[in-house]
Amino acid sequence: MTNLLSNPTYIQLLSDVKEKIRQAQVKAVIAVNQEMLLLYWEIGKAILAKQDAEGWGAKVADQLSLDLKREFPGMKGFSKRNLLYMRQFAETYPDFEIVQEPLAQISWYHNITLLQKCSSQKERLWYAAQAMENGWSRNVMAFQIETKLYDRQGKAISNFSTTLPEPDSDLAQQALKDPYIFDFLTLSKKAKEKDLEEQLVRHITSFLLELGAGFAFVGSQYPLPIEGEDYRIDLLFYHLKLRRYIAIDLKIRKFKPGDAGKMNFYLSALDDLVKDETDHSSIGIILCKDKKNVLVEYALKDLSKPIGVSGYRLTDAIPEDLKSSLPSIEDFERELKELDGRDEE
Image 1 (tube, rainbow, N blue to C red):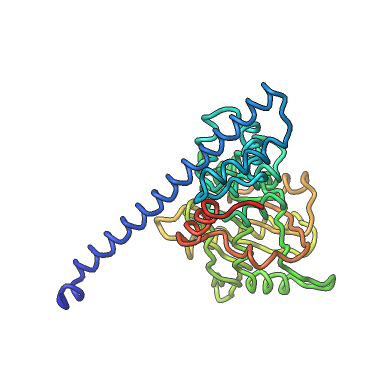
Image 2 (image 1 turned 60 degrees about the vertical axis):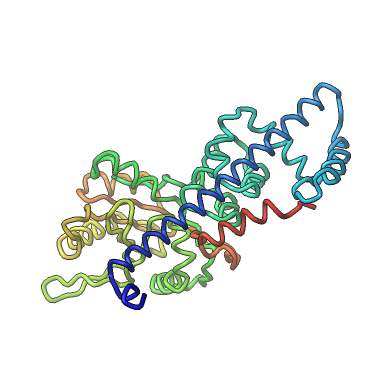
């Protein structure tokens, strides 16, 4: 046995088996969640049908809650409040196919949040798909809704359509927002760009959450040595899905046309000095306090490098429980156990 534990082949086998078990555990949890959500949809549909046919009001939920708790004492989720959510769930999504994908891939409490905070079906389904793809917890999804990510995603002004091939141009555009919400920063009116950079690095977890899935932090004041001088990129990231370096230039003022030329220079140097042969060409993001759209469009029009320009907004601080958009498998399982075992008041 001791020999096996020191054998690289056995260690790899053990690692592979562990991963397969973890994947199977997650699939089992998701399958249970799907069945429960479909049950809730069917209960809500039945309540709707009887209310329409018999003219019953909301009080039917009181009696139904009491009878279901009596009949199924070991099951949770049959409070009056939860039954009314089931009714709203079925009323909002009358199409069974919509419930199956992607709504059945996220928790019941994710779905309640969508019902409470989103006004249109298109918006709800978009957030559901994003939550499923990015592994958002319910709190993170609620924060993204409150900061209107749906309206901000892909809205940066860029020249990607002329500098990047399809479908990369669309993927890159969707990776950018306008404006970015830096709720976690506290800057005075006299703050300088260095202060903005230092606070973004200090709150890198919150910054990465706002940037979105796929961004990996490389460094700040990243040096580009050219002919004996060090030119420095404010913040450098690598995007795992796009396979591109992302250079960010911070401005604590309005956008100026010269900012685009400076970023074009940085990207040329970055591609020559840093980019590997397996990487695609780098992308630049200019984050500024304000901008005039027509001015930005003219500044980017004839540049050869892919550049986007976005604004940013400073508001109140992000709550501590919203600092991570990547919950662990244990977090995911715990949240699903809560929805299976916790009764709504």
